Length: 90
Image 1 (cartoon, rainbow, N blue to C red):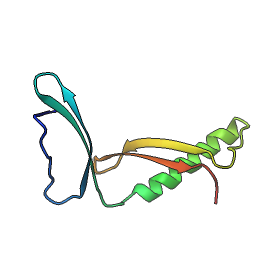
Image 2: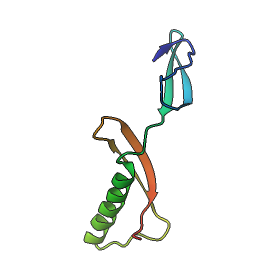
Image 3: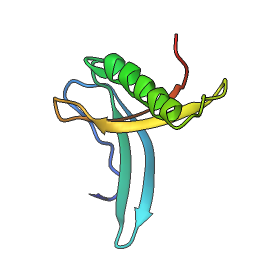
Image 4: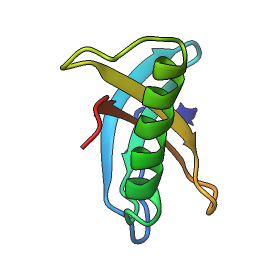
């Protein structure tokens, strides 16, 4: 939340302003995405996809070709993420 339509900055990380939404009393809700090093994200993505396939197969369901899953969580360093990935085994 900010007073007025400000431009938010970060000392070192890349960022992208996704939205600035008007709120009452000249306030704004500003949605900003910050870049973070990949770190553990590729392994989390692989694990999330494999877990999803395992759960589906335990229920007798084979994911159809082209199916996507959407995942969110928090890294061990405390930053949050959300990603979409095609659900298939390599």
